[in-house]
Amino acid sequence: MRLNKNDNRLLDWTPVWAILASLLLMAGCEDGHSHQTSAPPVPEVAFVTVSPQPVLLTTELPGRTSAFRIAEIRPQVSGIIQKRLFTEGADVKAGEVLYQIDPAPFQAALDNAKASLAKAEANLPTIRSKAERYRKLMASNAVSQQDYDDKAAAHRQAEAEIEYWKASVKTARINLGYTRITAPISGRIGRSNVTDGALVTAYQSRELTTIQQIDPIYVDMAQSATELQRLKRSMDAGRLKQSGEGHRKVNLVLQDGTPYPLEGTLQFRDVTVDPTTGSVILRAIFPNPDGVLLPGMFVRAVVQEGVAEQAILAPQQGVSRNPKGEPIALIVDETGKVQQRRLTLDRAITDQWLVTSGLSGGERLIVEGMLKVRPGSVVKAVPFDRGQAGSKDGQATGTKAETR
Image 1 (spheres, rainbow, N blue to C red):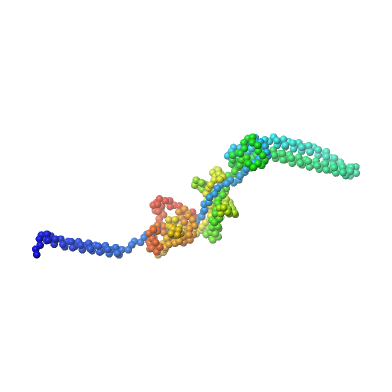
Image 2 (image 1 turned 180 degrees about the vertical axis):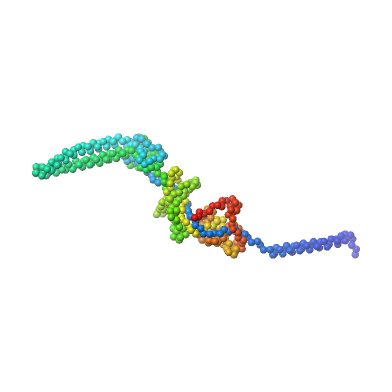
């Protein structure tokens, strides 16, 4: 058999193709072998170590301000208002004259009582001397017992009449003083309900004006009876301690979110539960020298409950929820395996949860990489860097729970 030139060229390339095919086959075998033998990488998670620490616990309650003292001004005598002597909305002092009622009728009554008293006092010496003479004459039987008794009775009647007119003078003087209506307390006065020339009657139902003392000022807060019982159980169990007078301190947040600069003091808790709201009223007193707080304002009060000496705080990013809505967390045990814990949460404190059960001091709580692991997985645990996390998320990381 004879081969042409093309057949010779084919024979020349045959060894080359064979070598290339062998190399490709070897590479495929090696690649498949490497995929079958390489182990998956160990997932990396970041953790924080939880530790017990003393934490000052507070609760925020809605409240309203009310005046420290309120005086409704009413007339004590009837008459015509001659003049209003105060500026509406101004501060007044105790004893300052607010209204002047026409004093002329009361001055006349006082003068009349004084004149009657003087007349009674003028008649007394004559009647007294007659009674004394009759007493002496009766000793010698010059006058009858009846005559003496009449003179003695006239003497006692004259003395009683003097006492009567003295009381009348006193009453007339008091009524004359009532024509000057004065402020019983110091405080801020409201608008006047009467004008000059108005007729007023003694002890009328409508007040002339109102004075309110707003420095200091009360803040009344509503706390649920359920929360009150929870606090009592915590203190009875020793989980919460009240440190001296510190638990009586109260802070305020105004309606626009501005914190009130001065600190108040808790006065008392009411002993009656409101049946319509199921809450108990707490009252605190605040200094108010600049008049920032006005009666009837809505505020939020931050009340100190006490100190939890062995509180466990967990970052909120390390706590999730299971399908039942229960809070859960993942921890890394001593062997590097992941374990799941079901938690009981008390409240949020800044960016952390106060955990009452489910975590113990010294355990490593996973806060990053939770989606890459499951319970029982072996992980590589590294400490969580709060500074880098804050710069990455663009959030403040310096806020911590208030501790002692």
